[in-house]
Each structure stands twice: as structure tokens, then as C-alpha cells.
Length: 419
Ligand SMILES: [Zn+2]
Image: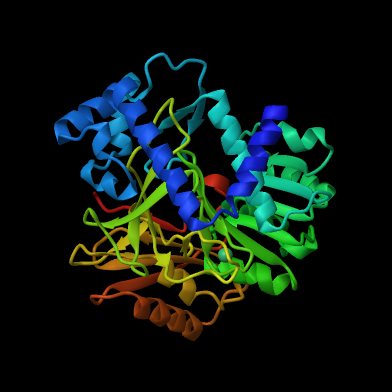
């Protein structure tokens, strides 16, 4: 308990460190990680030997460019060679099935604890107060972080997304949260099932959610239906834990810079601030199964300039999605489906929508309205969507009578193109 408190205090302190001190901290941690990986993890020793790089060559984040990027497939192939020799009694975390192929990340109990404490730090940074009732809607399983629970503060109720919808609804209502931390897909399913807005069930002050799966239409509906509600975006993954969270100024998401080195790349080269790049992560706190230049694959862009909140930590705009979740144009170029989402933002009668790409020349928009709209309205929506696409792509609109209740599995964009 004491060590947990001390670790948490130092985590909190780091948030206010000046940039120079943080840079030095990151350099020290990076060197230790790379040395450890080379000495104890066969996969990284092989990778570095093949690249002709020694641990002494990686002195600071910019030196990481000398190493190749590691993919999920690389680590899956490496199997036990991706783990540090002698690492035992590890906690296994499963990544969400974006690629459809399961992948496991392993952490020691201390690493897992650090991750939970970083979650807690993120909650406090987002504006969660000690006396708040917090309801977590969506995860299939969770382990509690004991520190604050022992203090009788930050009461958390966990509602797994796998529960029957009727039970989710009843328990959510009974939990009367001040803060609702929700998986957007689960929350959406629940609201469709309830047939009302969030305000008809609970009235939280804050909704914390992952921006990646929170489409602008749904976000806008939540804000319009619940005056005064604040939505806080977090960006994270099973591989790395929290990667970034909305700043108190609400102008972008600050990177978890003391735990991660985040690179944004295009064709293997760093992109300039403002341009979207694919995320590549180095996790500075994970030694049992190191992730060094691990390809996370979400598209993000850095926000240039200082943040008005005063924190000297880089900010990103909300992630644009994964490359796998992108529309493929006839030329083979990929664009984010985000623009399609944005185009539908003001369609208040829209209960759910989904885009399915089956050919290189068209996209099917499955739209579910609360009342069947007249044909001219549908034509206008179709034109609006087509205007977001390029290279003459067509949009075929299809009305769907009932929303999908796929819970966690629902995806706004589905590509059925052969890869
Ligand atoms: Zn800030």
C-alpha cells in the first residue's frame, strides 16, 4: 500500500515537470529499456543484431529511427522469444479484435499496477473528484485499483458490456453516476435499446470515452441532449495502456509522455506537426514483454504550439482511426471514414449508421432513422456523403429498419475488400 501511494505521488508529480527534466527522464528510461531488451529478450537481440545496432547506439528517442518497426505479427511469430528470459507469473491482456486475430500482451504485477495507477491519474486529470460515483460501462472484465477504494473514495461500479441489455440499463440507472466512463459502442447499443437519450437514464457531469469509436454524430447527440455535459476523450490500447487524454483546457489530448515514446510516421519517416501519421510506440515501463517501436497503427496528428494549460507535454488531436478502418479509393489510396461521420453530424433523426465497402468504386451506407425520411431527404444525404469522398466514388444508401445490437463488436466502417 505504501509503495503504491508513493508511486502514485511520483506519477502525479511528473505531470508538472518542466520539459528539460522530462526529456532527461525519458532518455534514462529508454536506455535502460533497450539495454534490457538486448540482454534478456531474444526477439530484440536478433532484431538489433540484424540492424547492426547496439544498445549504446540508442541514447535518445531520435535514435530509435535506427531500429526497425515491430508489428503485432512479428511478436506473435516470436512467441516466447518476445518475453524477457525468466519473466514469470505474468498478467495477460488481450487486445481488442480490430484485425480479427487475437494478440496477448504480458505484464508483471508491478507493471500492471503502474498501468492502473496511470488510469487513475488520467481520471483525476480529466476532472474526476474524490466523492464522485463513477460507472464503467463496457469492459468484459476488470481488476480494481485498490488504493483509492481502500480510502473509500472514487467509488466505481463496473457494468460489463456482455451483460443482457435489460440488466445493463437497470444497473446503470441505479448507479446514478457523476462520471460515466463508457465504451461508445456499448453505450450506443444501450441507448438504442432504451429508446431514449442518456438524460432519460442518468445525468452524469462527465462522460469519459475513447474518441476513436465515438463518431461525431453520436457525440453531438449526447451534447445536445444533455446540456452542460462534458465529454473527455482518452486514447489507449491494451498493448500500451493510456496513450493520451484530453487536456483540462479541452484543446487536444496530452501524450502520456513519461510512460511512452510516441512516433508518428508516414512511409517510415516522421511526419511534421499537423500532418497525420501512423502511431509507433515505445513503452518505457514494460520490461517483461518490451514494446520497442511497436506499430500501433492508429492515425494521429500532433497539435503544434504550446497548450494554454501550461503543461509542457505534446498534444495530439483525437485519433482518426486505424488504417484498417479506412476507405480505399479506386486508386488504392486510403482516406479516413471520419469525414463521412462528420457529414452526418446534424442528422438528428438518425439512430444508427454504418458504412460498408465491398468494391473499390462504391460504399454502402446503412442508415437507420427513427422515422422513415422522404426520398428527397435520402437523396440529399447521399449527395452529402458522396461529396466527402474522392475519385468519383459512389454512395448507395440503404435503409435499415432496426439498429444493430452488436455491442462491443459494432463498427461504423466495415471493409469487405480482399486485402
Ligand atoms: Zn493542456
